[in-house]
Amino acid sequence: MGNINRKGNRSTSQQVQHLKQIKTVDLFENLNFVPVTVAKEVNKLGEQPTYNDLQEVKSNLNSMGYTLDYGLDAVPLNLRRI
Image 1 (cartoon, one colour):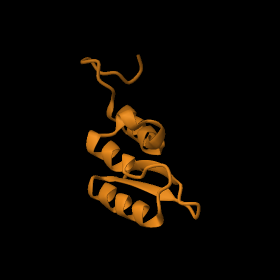
Image 2 (cartoon, helix red, strand yellow):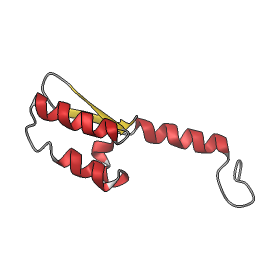
Image 3 (cartoon, helix red, strand yellow):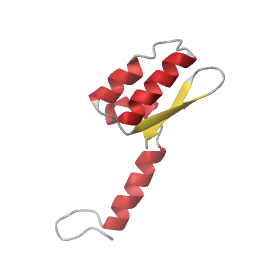
């Protein structure tokens, strides 16, 4: 059982490891793991977002505790918690 305590909960070190794994997952591929408000903001981008769209959505996501990256091709990627 390793690091499971008597109550069946993970130890602190397991919780930290789990959070690190979540932080590295691209949430664009797993929108069901983000709050509805974050998913709605991401969905505003549509199929062909402009740089202005990306900057606005990124700013709004930052205020919710999330961020994203995008390249010269204006394709959003790497949605994650800050």
